Figure 1 (tube, rainbow, N blue to C red):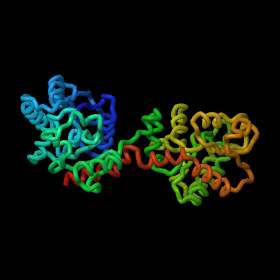
Figure 2 (cartoon, helix red, strand yellow; figure 1 turned 135 degrees about the horizontal axis):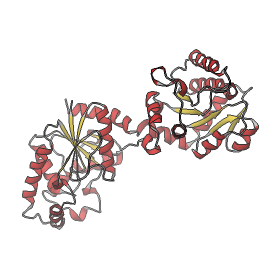
Figure 3 (tube, rainbow, N blue to C red; figure 1 turned 45 degrees about the vertical axis):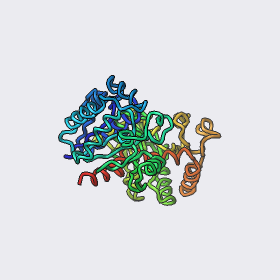
Figure 4 (cartoon, rainbow, N blue to C red; figure 1 turned 60 degrees about the vertical axis):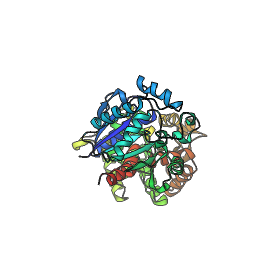
Length: 413
């Protein structure tokens, strides 16, 4: 197992963009078989990671702040070499047993110049393999320029460090760093911060499990049908529309049906069997998901209200083809969740959804025409487009799998 040290002035659970990145990197890399050690001046226990805290690494350490006041004025104080030596010794201890170090901001930022200097010496001496993760650049920021001076050791923050791979958090930052230190932009990886949809949406544990098991976040769109499996819900129309939706778009759209068979009609379990047969006939076994049938070890699964609410947050649209309704609560729930609504044109649903829902005839409409309507609405919806791009490219799990792990494999060869 490869062990990585993540170095920053502060670690989780301190609130901050870098600290959040450390926490998510630790979690996802641990899932992928890496051992993680967070090395910082402050912080606390972090799930999925060993924590090594040394107050000497903190940018708010009293001695560090005293040195910084002198350094900012352009004077390198007599105590500076001793601080570099102490930091160097402490880093050697902190990195013991690690195969590589990922240092956030230290190679380009002047919050703790002695710590950056010590890290530089370890690189120059071949003691560590370093990935410099650049969020901020002091030498290109007018706010910090008064604190910098055109001499050593300030200039080490605008140099290419030996035996170091560079990562920036955005394309503009990549261009900025390349121009400053003289590397070609293509030599600098771009790995942006990410987002955790489940954490952000406060999904239930069951919703997270279902999303992972069914790969819902890897899909191109999720239609939610929150209903019991009864014939009046007209679920077979939703299945046929999904088949057309996938055929017309060439995209991986999914349908999630949340409820169990209705409890009051003994024919309902047979209806589920018909729907499962239709799903197989249309080649949708991996695309139409009846949550009732997703229990483990042959057990049935009944979603609780909080999990259904999480699924509203996860989904991209409500699809509600019911033939009969007394009222139509899902229309209101979808409105609260800001979902586009596609529903049967029956009086109760029109009363609650018009003029904001998109209606179709649940008995006579061609599934191909309904699918075309769904695609037209979603493709014109900027919120849907941004949501899918975010899920496709900016989830922590996807970023780490597609961008960070390939870099680590190169560095650790």
